[in-house]
Amino acid sequence: MSNPKAHAALYRWTGGRVGARLPMVTPPMALVTTTGRRSGAPRVTPLVCFRDGDRLAVAATNNGSGVTPGWLHNMRNDPEVRIRLGTDESAGVATEVNGEERDRLWNRMVREHPLFGLYEQRSPTDIPVVVIRPERELGVRRDDADSTTRRLRTAIVVSGLGHVVHNVSEFDAVRASAQSAFPLAVTAAFWVAARRPTRAYLSALIAWALVVVVIGGGSVLPLPIWPFEPAQTMGHYVVHALYALAQLPVLVVACRALVSTRRPPVDLSGRV
Image (cartoon, rainbow, N blue to C red; front, top):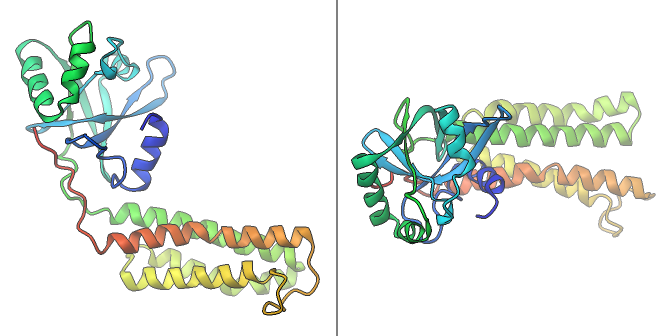
């Protein structure tokens, strides 16, 4: 993916199921966070990584351009990094290697990922190799229930805000409070239960979101089958459209989680 920020965002959102392995890439990809040497801000870069015992090795190929990438400058300035494989993340220390150790790792990288050999031919200088020693082992079929819970709860909060915005805009204060009580109570119950997202829970959450989409969004359709709102205004249409759209994050996250329960977890252990 040519856009590192979009790649990193997609990687995090899917727990590494998308973005961890690209076409023609055998080893896994990791998200490596360095500290900007000038800004001091965190900088996230997707990098192909290779296991070397309890370490992970990465190469500053920069597509064979011979230009040192910014993340390597950051590592040289501050070797403390964070590295993420799938849903698993740890702090680590980066060390640039040279001599025989660099050659050993580089030769193994080329064998595992032949595209690196092409980069070597293009590059006017030897491509730097860095090893990162994480505080703990990463990416070996780790349960991603915690990250699923975080995504579900975020989506459920968006859904709850949709209820509030709809009812406050539609009714007076007293009626809005009464109309909001039930959906907000249901939303709160789903938020709490997201700690253990079972298949039954996910199915119920999807059903609830669909009901809200149909009732909330469908009630403004100018059809005889939806006689709920006889007098429509453009503002009314907009509010109901937003109300329905606020449920889409729940549908997307819950459906993805439900599908993931049917397949084995992604294996990001890699080979070197």
